[in-house]
Image (cartoon, rainbow over all chains, first blue to last red; front, side):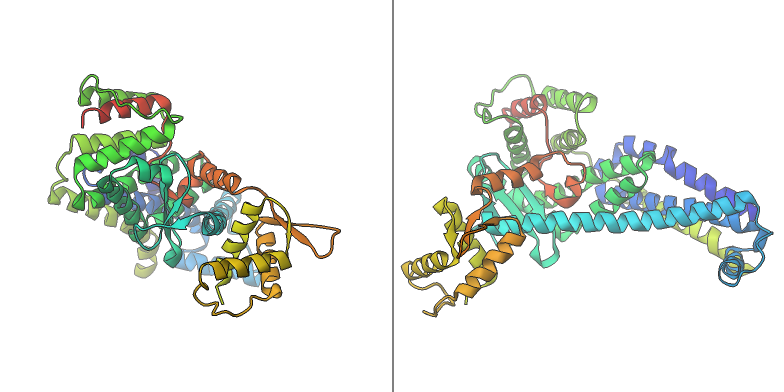
Length: 331
Length: 128
């Protein structure tokens, strides 16, 4: 039982620090965003599980040979006032920390959900009064605003994609189609659930490197996934143009006209990546990596490598689960 | 009967267009006029719109913080809290702003970029 808590602690530390840093610097996620997304989820889940599990197992060590026996003994102490002399200070400390961390994670998840839902409801209420239905399709509305803006507001059957007048004016029909397909991909692939989970994860443990890196990576990966859906029907050039027009239009204060060709596309891209990498925000980095993977596409990861990453995901989840449960089943 | 949502929208359009406070009665008359003008909107079928319905719509809008009542006068006069443009600006600020949890609330096609990044993208655009 004792070695279990150490193994879980090692796993928790590895997943909290070196693994997310390596993964966030890796180049391959842009080649297979879906696989990378699964890996981030496995890291977050396994990380949380092993963190709580390590403390729980350590704290229960004196009163049970395995997790189940330990929990049973603990229930006896809490519910039936059984003597607690077996538990030392550090055991009680670890148990309290495990309970607090679990409650904190669940509470933050619910609180984040509530906050997001409240903001979305308010946003939908205003849209119902301000925006008019679009000819582009069901669930698409147009709002009168000069900047080129496109976004989607998830909400089950009430999901809505919003386009601005400025966007409709700036884009060619094909580019507009690419934007709409991109936004609808977010909705149909339920990306908001991922964003919610990782936003809550970061909110709960803001000091943990994993949570920030995971959220940034997931934000960027869902954009790539949506781009890939758009590329099934629209050309790469169309999508890049749409991205560039929307990005340049939303930053400049109306001076977006007059695109001046200078240098080469490769040089311009390099400039973009440098600018975004050094001083840029998360979203600027995301835009840079999106454009760069469209301009210089690299093949998807070979199936064998994708398979082994998936196997790694399963292993990541199975390992802490097995460490927690198997000793109880054997004993 | 038009849905409450549609009526809310129609009432707000009137208040935004009118720029001044109006009573529920005035609003009902204006709504009836606009229905006639469009040849009777679907669902109305010539039925009179009840003032109580307009009052229900107004109180819903008041709860949402979109209209306010002038206290002291009877009957109450209602007006829009802010203009349509201000509300649109508020909405777009929410979309374009950099609130930390905005990314989880809605998914934008392109996140915020700085002027220099936009400049680079514009150059890039010249080559495609």
